[in-house]
Amino acid sequence: MGSNPNGGTIFFEKHKYSYNNPEQQKTKVKNVVYIHGANSSARSFRYIQKCLPDHKFLNIEYSVEIPLKVNISKIQKRIQKEFATKKVSIVGHSLGGVIAIGLHNKLKILDRTITISAPFGGSKIVEYFR
Image 1 (spheres, rainbow, N blue to C red):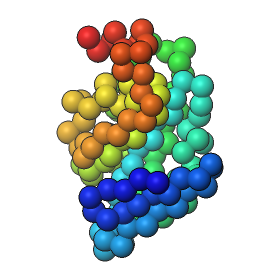
Image 2 (image 1 turned 180 degrees about the vertical axis):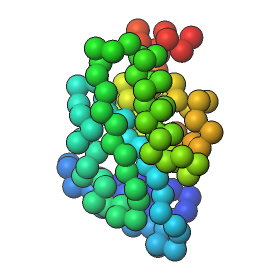
Image 3 (image 1 turned 30 degrees about the vertical axis):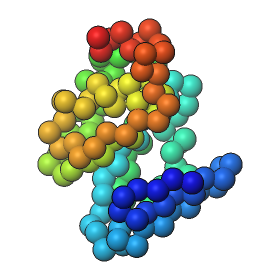
């Protein structure tokens, strides 16, 4: 179980998730970009989308065969095309978290960056940012 300062709570039990935030029901639609990990796909975040029906999601697909800088550039363009001037939050899992940090200072529309199990300091790929 996790919580946030706005009163919302996310409950995790194996692969079942539920989200409750009474204040969020009063807010406008939020835009979320999800960037999956290296051995996953854009489909891996679909389960949480059902818990957040008032959000607009963009699930990014990328190839680990392409250099990291190229992926970051392509993803940046895709996000800018999709959302233009609307604020967006990025959620990156594992290698997707590394990509999310690579996008952090490149997107003027960025509201927040959230990383989950990103290999900072534990992977050679992180050397890209040093």
